[in-house]
Every structure is written in C-alpha cells, then in structure tokens.
Amino acid sequence: MIKGKIVFITGATSGIGYATAIKFAEEGARLILSGRREDRLIKMSTEIKEKYHVDVFTLVLDVQKRSTLSIMDRIPTEWQQIDILVNNAGLAAGMGPLHEGNPDDWDQMIDTNVKGLLWMSRAIIPGMVERKQGHIINIGSIAGKETYANGNVYCATKHAVDSLNKAMRIELVNYGIRVTLIAPGAAETEFSEVRFKGNKEMAKKVYEGYMPLQADDVADAIYYVASRPDHVCINEMIVMPTAQANTVHWNKR
Image (cartoon, rainbow, N blue to C red):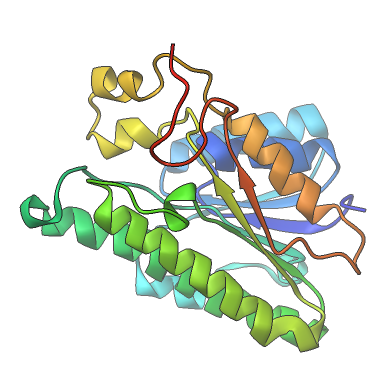
C-alpha cells in the first residue's frame, strides 16, 4: 500500500521526477518534492493538491551542494518519517571525446549524479535504519551498464550509481530496507536539451526515427517496484524503448 506513505523525490520539477510525483499522488502518497526551480515547485504543488487532494511539502534544493547533508533540519517533524526516497536528480552535460572534455561539465555531472545521491542518501537513510524500514530507489541509466563513445564521464557517473545501489542493498539488508536501481534507456524528457545546453534542434535529433520512452513509462516502473509487498525487493530494473537494444544498437526508421 502506497496511500499515506511519505515519498521524497529529488529533481521533481520536470521529466521523470515530475511524472513520478503525479503517479504517487494518484495513489494517495504524501509527497516531499525538491528541485532548484522554486516557481515550478510552487506550481506543481498547487496543482497536485487541488487535483489529487494529497499533502505536499516542497523544498528548494540543489543536491550538488554539500549542505544537502543537513536537509532533515529543514523538514518538519511530521514529515521526517520518509518511507520512500527516489534519488532522481541527475543530468548529462556535454558530449564528446574525453580529451576534448569540459571540466566544468565533469564537475556538474559528478556533483549532481554521484555526490548529490550521496548527500541525499546520507541524510535520509539513518532515519530508515532507526525505524528498520524504508525503500531507496536510485535512478541510474543504461549508460551505467554499457559505456558508449563520447558519453565517458556521464557513463562513469551512472556506473557509480549502479555500484552504490549494490553497496546500499548489501549494507541495508539487515535493517529490512529495500534498495532498487531503475536504469532507463532513451527517454524523451529535458535530458538531451540539458546535455546540449539548450539546443532544441540537437536534442530533437536524439529521438528521431523511433519511439523513445516517455517520463510516464519510467514513473510506472518506479511505482511498480515501490508497490510490491514488503518482503519483495526488485534489486534493479532496466527499462528500454522497444527500438533500443543497448547503447549502440537501434531500430531507427
């Protein structure tokens, strides 16, 4: 049962995070939604409350910052028993060979995809350990399973997420805490637009010739693993468009 559970979603203001918030709201969860864009948080909070009649608490948060470690200090007592943490915040910045890479892009990807997940997990997991219950859902990528040309550092960060997910599963099993990796393939969100620094034309080309995943498809997978009975833990799930076999093999028209 998801109804009444407290679900904390990072990167909730767009794409997979937004779709996941809607999915859990439909099922009656109480939502803690975080993101960097306060205007979007306010808008989506109002919409979700009005449409789904669930409680929503919002936090303006940049997971890249080490101050995320003290996030529990900003959460009211009645919201602190977090049942499900969805470590969704992540991004790709730039694309090209390593020897031509932009170190600022590297910092952004490492600070968001790896350190951001670490800060959030370190802040939230102790409460789950104390209660001996909870579920951590880490959003990885097919890029964390298979490296592809020109995606070097992004792939490395998602390989790190894959490894951290496995470590959490081992370290938390004695506390009854579930840990799951969701690894999507190509999903049509703001992802490519962010990667190409707002170049909509380049972003659009990524999804030409086939039907990519939509944010709702990934949200459905996240909800599915979260809604299994307490004795069932899906360690990882790879979700791909039918037209994508792996990072390099496609059926494009």
